[in-house]
Length: 252
Image (cartoon, rainbow, N blue to C red; front, side, top):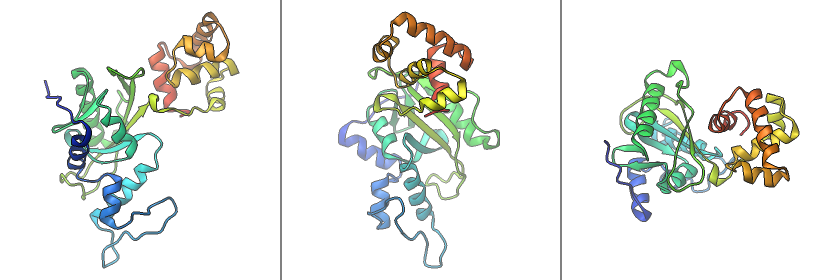
């Protein structure tokens, strides 16, 4: 079994900077002299001969990750992150579900760790196959009230990664405890849900229980469970976890 010694507080930030090769957004901005990087701002990404350098590419990629609304990181072989946005680092800093160790990314349970490394390997080694079949999946957490939703897809293949690998996977982390915005109209359009069913589905995706959702909607738990059965039928799902995972990637 892999060692799961995690980092806390200031130690985490130091470890994160080391593990990410100091490619967190603040460090990239400072190193590149682009502290005022904002959407639409102008900055140069080139060497003296007009060609983009490896560092320039990493700056641009990390800046792009920062624009994503959920946790996102580019991961090389053996679960070693190469670039990450602030949301991903915030999720890792919780040390709940997935943590960053000296050996790379490790989940709370050994089975989740094996699955994570398996699909990362598939996405990196066989990018032409697209998203691995077992992605997305949910990672149970010890502290948070909701599971962490993990999705892995093939990432860009570049020669500038610090570990010498030219292939990566894009690892997406969805922490519903941090808030999730759901498009209820899209739910209704995609799955033919009624307004009541879409309202219930939205709250389940956001991490609420049946009891909490029914209270929000001013309906009984019996009515909520009836809605849920119809939602299962319309979305071709059978369990609440399966429903949440599917909807996370269609309307969020």
